[in-house]
Length: 464
Ligand code: NAD
Image (cartoon, rainbow, N blue to C red; front, side, top):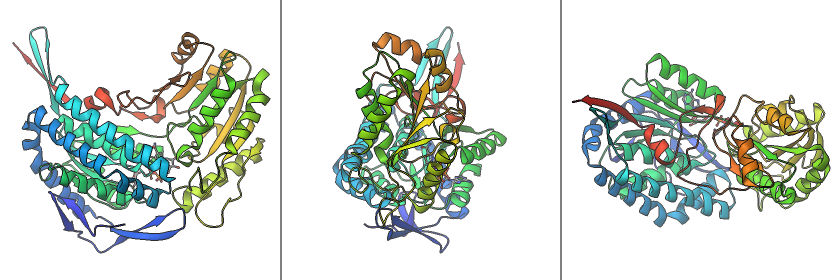
């Protein structure tokens, strides 16, 4: 695994200003696989200047020209899929099939969708006696987490580029090698110098310097609610645009007429995928009292197929492993019934956590309220549909969810009453164009598709 010693700024790899580095660890075997520079405020400043200098030229590039560059970027990502998948497996620990299909595959889809949108989007509209121009916001500061290292980069950078913005990216400390590969892809795709810049580093140092930099017009952040709140406050004080994609505690609502086995199996797969490190995971399964025990048994049987080290990878680092094991212990201490897994580490080496099912979880328990971010499913019992709705909506989050019913109309009627940004109806499929983002404390703004593009535009109206 090759690690760059510098930052990608202004179209070339430049030495970092400081001496400090960050060790990158493979969470499956705890071995150090490389080092990247820990950026300082000076590196961030150089990157923001490069992005500012590139902005007028990129903003003035006709949409078809921007589309062509994004299409070239998509092609490079597609051509380097194996290398991307291997890198994600090495620094995140995800099993190779997941790395191939999701971590390397989805960014190709998303970049492709923005190549098409850049070419077809209406950057001008007529409104009565006005012409409304949709113009790029300016320089974007993108701060991304480690759980979908390339997807989260592409979900910010591709729409920003399509809009005509330039970007400085500060990726997560745990997964900087994937970000360096992305910078290589940008270079190979022939994007003009300074349109995309990368500064690796620590959140409270490089991340904070980027969020606070006066040359940044919009901060797009994905990560924890605590940091999101801080970034929102910083952006608010500077009257800067901000997009926040934060946590979730989504509900998988299984209504009485639903196909129970299918709903439970798909629900378990959703939670166990990526070792449970998915902000939109349906970590609370809601089942009616009559079929509750049957659902719990089905969930326990389904989870048994997720063998650590085979179908399910480790968590990203020791801190996350300890945090998730702590949540399992807390769930049991507060009265939940352990029906699969448990707090003990399933393997001697690597940051693994046993895929776990907690039954008899009640809505006020910590495990039903807080984001666990690990392979832990909570099964809750509801009395009737109103009770199910109350439980589904009864957290500070509102990112995603699922509803299963006898037919789509019944599921849709329920989904309309959910306080959440995305709902899968009877096992609906992933759509890379569907707006993704949260209600309530799950965030501000939307990513993906035309709604994701609109985040990076500001309007100017001309009256005639
Ligand atoms: P985090 O919020 O600390 O990190 C996310 C990104 O923000 C990283 O790039 C980090 O370097 C940066 N960052 C950290 N502090 C910063 C600051 N003061 N200013 C600017 N940038 C800063 O998340 P974490 O500690 O890696 O994970 C903790 C928890 O967050 C997880 O357990 C999970 O609940 C949640 N999380 C959510 C998502 C999501 O997709 N919504 C992703 C990762 C983590």
